[in-house]
Image (cartoon, rainbow, N blue to C red; front, side, top):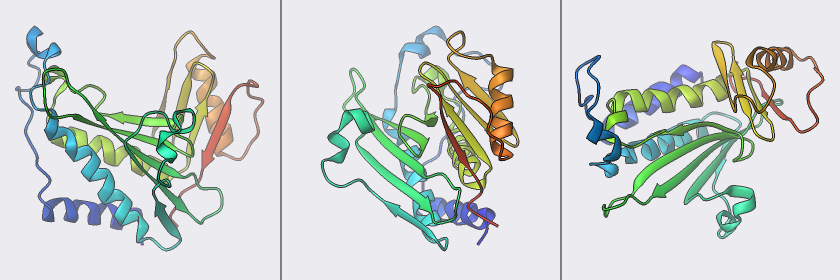
Length: 225
């Protein structure tokens, strides 16, 4: 089974189960109105990020050597280890040198709304090594339609399991790298972006660059041939 096979299964199941989609609320290049930045008119629609992640978990669990498991009851209450999450699944490959994929769900209250906003955290090995948070903002101004959101979920998961993937977690900064690009956050609190990307590339190549003492490095190869 290939990564493309898994992606195809996710898309088929999304269509079969009728994941609710919606178009971008405005034409291309049109700026949102000021009132849209403080409004979350339909928080329930964002449940698709949780549903899409669950389909990925199901599809990946069908790959030989891959297993998926949820934390034991009560474990999510340990905020020091997990933070504040309502549900979680950890997916692991038996292949040497691979990173665990964590799909972490939150139901965020929205002021003035009965429905909660679904937020998906995608991480590697530990919840603190957060690769993506989707949606990054649930306000109407940041809504560009469901397709962009689903593609962001797919891209983040594919980068981790498709490998190679490197994540660096500093005290006040973090960075990630994959063959098609990378990024860093925490400007002014850690090494410059170029230096961080250089470390990541060396780690992916199997080297051992000297990293700051407070930096944790997560280096993963592909789950697939």
